[in-house]
Length: 44
Image 1: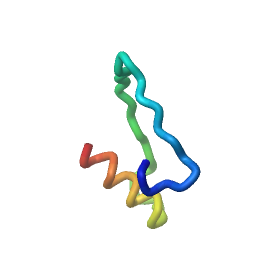
Image 2: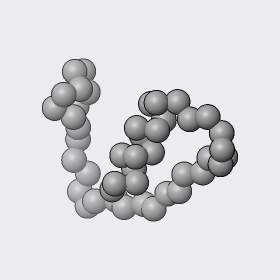
Image 3: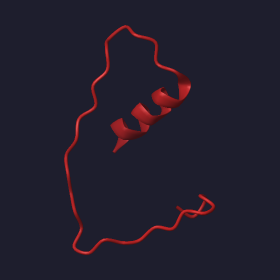
C-alpha cells in the first residue's frame, strides 16, 4: 500500500479470513498481467 498513491489501507480488527479459488481454461492465452497475478497468488 505504501507504493500506491491515492490508496489508503485500513486495518480490519478482528482479521477476516476467506479461502477463495481461481479457475481458468487450460491451454488458453493468459496475458502478462494475469500471469503475474496468478504467480503472486500461488506464492501466498
